[in-house]
Image (cartoon, rainbow, N blue to C red):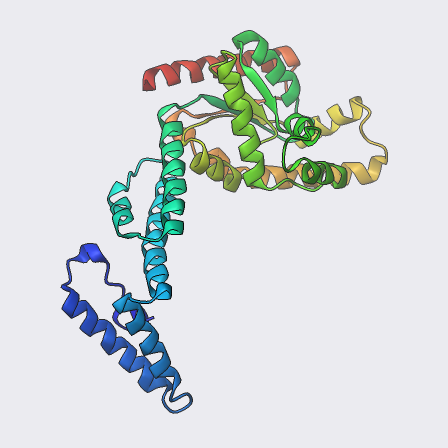
Length: 320
């Protein structure tokens, strides 16, 4: 609480303990003076609690001291995740030697396991191609053809969700089944967990590349995948005019109420394209994104996506 007055004084700043104590004590005195007119005893109670923490003699004080250090270590790992594993903040993990409670040590072991898993995944980067485009654009046709041409593992998020919802061993199967029945979007964190598991199954089966359909639908989802799984992923951004998509949907007999559906579909296409603006700009300059004009025939579009995937493969080789 004294930090609100004197600022944060981290251990690595090299401030002598005596000076740190003096500054923080001054902060609590100032807080007490502010509280004095309305709550004269509250300031003393707050300062006494701080002194108890500083002395570290009671069980409660020792626990809070442990958690203060553990929280710093957790924050450091969260920063490692946000920087896609490019930062290794091992120096903060040195605080582990100062955690003395059995529960604190138990949580430390879990944090160590999580960090090790995080960096192991970063070391074993798996090439992933996300196929993104509005409904009716022909994504399923193209990623099916690609998986045959290049021996890729093709993953549909919808298929993964349906498959997992029927797996009674999965702890969230009932929840997934409810989401699917109610047409409610599954939490991004859960979707990423299931996709990562499916990608790893493909690796074990000898598939070095995976092509994913149905994810991501926004820049936020892409960033979360990059934080939790891996940073660099390839994207096939499939574009088509709204008029062409409407014609294709009509040809498939997917419109029941013509006027209403055309308005709704056109709006969904616009909303989807707006949502993808940031995704489009994100990895393009580094060779991780290819835009595909899907207004042509299946064969013409397949020629374009095949060339794009070939370039992705060459790009991946050059980065090894």
